[in-house]
Image (cartoon, rainbow, N blue to C red; front, side, top):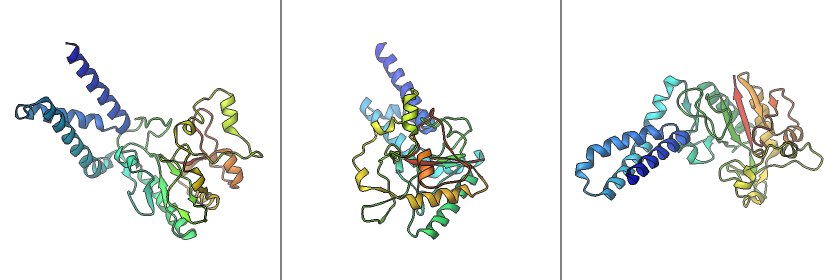
Length: 275
């Protein structure tokens, strides 16, 4: 009896995690369980059932992610962002977890901005981070507070190496958590928010490795140009970036705002939001 309860709890845990992290993984797990139950008589051992379940789930998930979901997301008003080229995910895991879906208007904003930044800075590549899930408004994209309707997208800063050459990468393995911190003369919202008890505001710095930071130089010119290009698009409603960077980069658009201490630091990425 304890063994059965344990299996049920483990399955429920996997179902919940896959649903929260990928939105569709839970459904694929249920489908996998159905297929394995049909094949059970042909599978002679428990281990063969586990191995078969793993292989079936992997095949269904990969084929669904790259072939089925991009098509079935269209009726929900979502489209996937490009996988390669001048716009690409900083990490392939963003695509594998189905976190690269936005509404068509937001994809157009990023496409137009990528063309403009390439024209001004040849060789520039726009690396996106988290967008949204493929289905339904209101489904949370954890740990984000607002990425639940396909209208928000995080974009990595631009960087160069110590020799001044453009990089199409970022110092953080996940795109978040390696900050371009305030200078002594600049307003320090990370410090202000921490003093008010918002412990989560700078938590990513304690989670993400900082070992690559010295090899990446924040490209202020390209980042400022990109933000200015995006801010001029009529479909863009808000842009979040840390206040000290807004001042340092001389960004003047009223669309560029402070996101509030209840969020996390935005001196590692740009948050773009459309109407």
